[in-house]
Length: 427
Ligand code: DLL
Image (cartoon, rainbow, N blue to C red):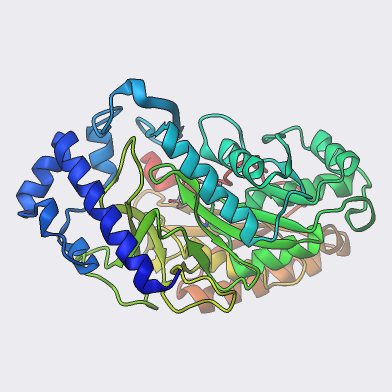
């Protein structure tokens, strides 16, 4: 759709949404009043910035159903994100929300070239997490054969991928590496015995270096895909075959990038916090929801022909930045460095500690490849020194580094937990 036409569509849908929440949700009525905005004041998309922002705290304060615009009768599905502390975030769907979810998920597959001919092995977790059922819905919509494997029992997953001839793998990037490793342990040669040609990976941050690792290990083309429970789950944005950013389903979700401190808009091409307004959600529409994900936006048309805005890979979250001795450290940067050092595997852990009366300490553990480990202590120490130097050069502080034995770092079936911040534990 040409952008001018798209923007007209967006404006109409935005007005409908604002009217809906203003009439049905006391929280939004008050917030709009406080901002001095009425639905009829929205004359162009620029007026979006006059609307109040919504935060995770607002969702918590209205838990579980305070932001619904419809009676509970009209809700046909409830998902929830786990959340590390306190109550989860609720994702309520009406029948039309589910239909729209199927539609945007079908686009995710189509952008990766998936058709009704494909066999999709879906190893995202089924359950409250939106990954499993979201990818399931979209595969049905494009008419592919879906294998609802969910996470875990990795040996059986490798067997099924081989026996059923899966052509597409969907799971978190970290779990894809677990499957690759399991295939190797079982002596299953991925190149000759599996038929995977594409993988659609998301739900956690991963670098370009990680993409190369995954593509090489699994012999497939890896696509990044983005979403969050608050919007709809997966299906918010996804890569096309150009791999030049993720196309946002902008006819359903209006993107903005803002300065996380001042809230001011950030121009296209610069890093800001991603903010979304849902413009077709029925169950729980959200205005200007702060995702806390750091990204760049572009509205330049893509070489693939799609006109929808694109977002960069997620460069980290505004709340996962580690401040260590006054220096800002992003886990994303650590991953980029780790994966460039030869002899290391893409399994790592970042530990932060504040020993009593001492300065903060940053430690990075990475697994050696079996080959490096066999070459012995001296080579391992040499790799450790290289990693130490490269990390210090990139981060601006020198972490402690440990290159560890293969398979010594815990694997995950879903989102990998790569940071252990002991300062949060009060030690
Ligand atoms: O992770 C939905 C999803 C499922 C997306 C499957 C993609 C694939 P939540 O559990 O609510 O929803 O977590 C949302 O995960 O705000 C980001 O911080 C992070 N995230 C999701 N996709 C990506 C990605 C699902 N491609 C939170 N890259 C978001 C980096 C991602 N981070």
